[in-house]
Length: 297
Ligand SMILES: O=C(O)C(=O)C[C@]1(C(=O)O)C=C[C@@H](O)C=C1
Image (cartoon, rainbow, N blue to C red; front, side, top):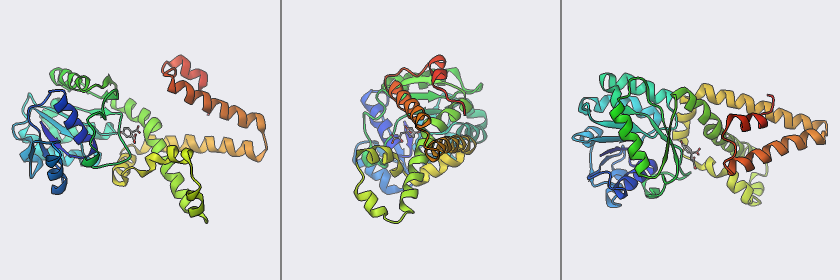
């Protein structure tokens, strides 16, 4: 296996793939040589490569675990070493841009690429945080296209299942719209909230009095800025729709407070509370149960 990008996601995948007995040898490459050598010291990879090309040479499986904006240049660089049987996957949080980048970069080898998004992570980053159990029980969304080869798709499904994930497939557009709401918007809101707090006088006092609510709500605001910059830009149009919806909803709260409208405020809070509680119990997944909770925007 060639691991391009030996950070949290790539390093955790390497550990899990080894533990499941899926790979014999992992050759790793990271942009920063100190990361690659740390991954080697930790036993995350077996061998250090000094370039992506060197890592991919002779690999049956190539995993890209790099910022989504680097997908095209990385794939274009390694394309000529990908043979018809190679399986290439990514772990990026956005899929339309990744699929388009892979199509342009890989051309006649595009069928070897199975776009994948494991919906798991941590707010910390770097190989030091690699965790053999990170993927256990996580959902993985595959977004194959009409050109994805069946053999590679089946192999990808088997690999993700073997490391303990639950695999689903959908179109890249569907994925990006859903993830804008369920992952990208919460990150943006937590980050914007931190910016807002910092812009106010007395921010230090506010921070010194922050408790578990603040901790839980803002955990993801500590995520890596460059990675999230790329995700927000790659999924810009869907995230902008989420911002509009949020602005609308904040307007509803503001209106209820301005007019001292107790029933309206309570109705909003009831909907929020019951939707969160039902999600936790896994009850909100059918279109029928969802529509019961949908408020008119
Ligand atoms: O748990 C976290 O810290 C995450 O940020 C994980 C999370 C998420 O939003 O759930 C973030 C981005 C990934 O693409 C998938 C999962």
